[in-house]
Image (cartoon, rainbow, N blue to C red):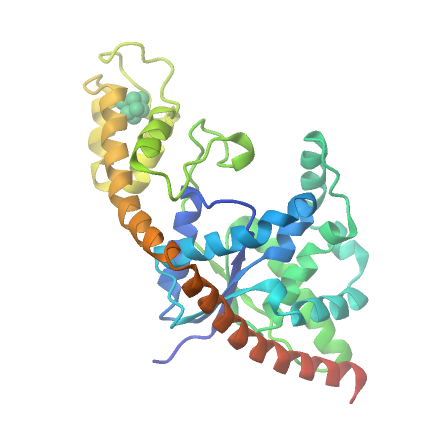
Length: 329
Ligand code: SF4
């Protein structure tokens, strides 16, 4: 089959995946036929903020790959690997660090915010590694000479930096790298059960592997319209977390739910029950597949080893070209 080109994407193994990651993974799965996909566990990136919790990263990586496989990332069609097992990423990062002006990194919009946010939580991430992580991302992408990267709007500045670095290298030494395009992913943003951004640090996530009881409990924790005291009180679905989830997981019923809520014809308990049922339908097969995969961790290790083999072959070729251009030998 003719594919449109090569894409690359990764995730940090900082803990168990949650339902917010599901849409991202479903998007990855949908790209597998159209593109040659490289999906990687970004374990070096995890160190930029979790350098003091490094011992859990490898175990998290294996768990995360199990989640990917359970959702439908297919090792026959896609290359699945762990970043730090392909050291060429680090070599290219080093070369890029020699030619990238510091100001390019300092102006990345999320940098100062992230440093402040972590500082407020008592963690100092104003490190050399954290400042340079967008450059490591550029190396992750360009080491495979990827044509496109699936990104959300918030990651566009990082991709622009990657394109600038590719342009600068090609201009200084000769062309090696393409300028990868953004593949804007229409991935719905799920709020946490408390209505804030879904994040483990807010303890408001629904684990992807949550058992049915835990899933129901998390749906019961969801914030609804505080103005509704009795079932017959007219509701305001636009302020309700349950309503947002219905919009993603029961879109065909959304208009009827809204109407029933506004007219006070449905209570929040019943509304949550139908949502929990819909989520269970989505998560039950994933949970079953994941359980089967985790029974044979040797299989996961084999998938990673084969992915590393395929990724490293590509990365070595790119580094040979890059070294040749830089050193002329
Ligand atoms: S009825 Fe449903 S949509 Fe309306 S406030 Fe309650 S949980 Fe939210």
